[in-house]
Image 1: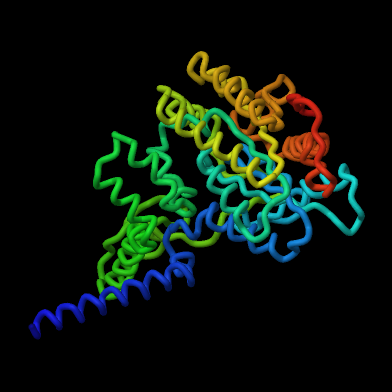
Image 2 (image 1 turned 135 degrees about the vertical axis):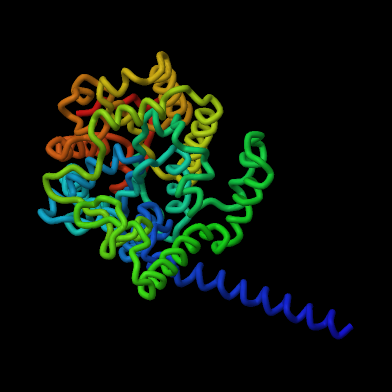
Length: 410
């Protein structure tokens, strides 16, 4: 009996300690300060938190959010650094003042009541990521008045992404209500389903690989101090990985990605980008396409439920990039986009045109060049000003007669 009571006390103590650790992780976000790569140092976690924090400071002023992948990130961030004339921290400075300047010059609002624009697009984002980010912001205390969502074929078909559960948006923002499709996926083992589901409950479990990486790095540094021999590989000044005493460990992360005026954000060359997209596009994963379009439809329905105006933008791609897409997929993708928007009376604009798909517009066949970025956002903001989003941002009464046409980019 004494042993049973003692065991019960140990279990209770362990549970209390576990709850305390979970609370500390959830409230203090210590993983954001670790010198290794963590989700809390990533673009999605920081962009959402920064937007919610800044949007809440002036809760009476409307704001618009830009969603999408790096195809949206590149022109917005590159134009922003040029507009400010100084480098910006890509993951933390999410106010798109270059977009604001152009949009406010086109909208009819009092001089003191300017519309704010925030960049919530995330590199590598999928359609499911757009849904999770939109839901998080729409359910926040200060919800956006309008949303612009840029999409492209890779957002729905990417063989380099294991599944929706692997994206940063799912890991950071998903909850138990999002596990329905997980249980129906017959390709996932029971162990993997448990791993994903338990990760919704426990932050420690969800980030265990990052914690392990940190303690591994800590162990290496301790061993290095007491051992007279060179044991570990590091990156030196030439960024070559080799055994050396000074340098940076492979798992060590310092600083944050920057965007500099007149320069493109981090990217591969055209050949490597094309090779990467070739793997992403081929072969078509029908299950993934259906799943991502289901999330896209959910985002459209969610914005309608919250009464928030949405503009869906088919982002421009170079002709060479579209040439490596499996035959018929781009046409089917574009038709499905248009139909989904038309069924819900949601505005749609297509940048798949000769004006924008020329090779000279892109740094690597998919990301818009820095010198073209300002022209792109000016065109996009002009489209926003000519759409029903302008009424939502101006605070005017919504009026809609008939169906909304597909806008033509300016």
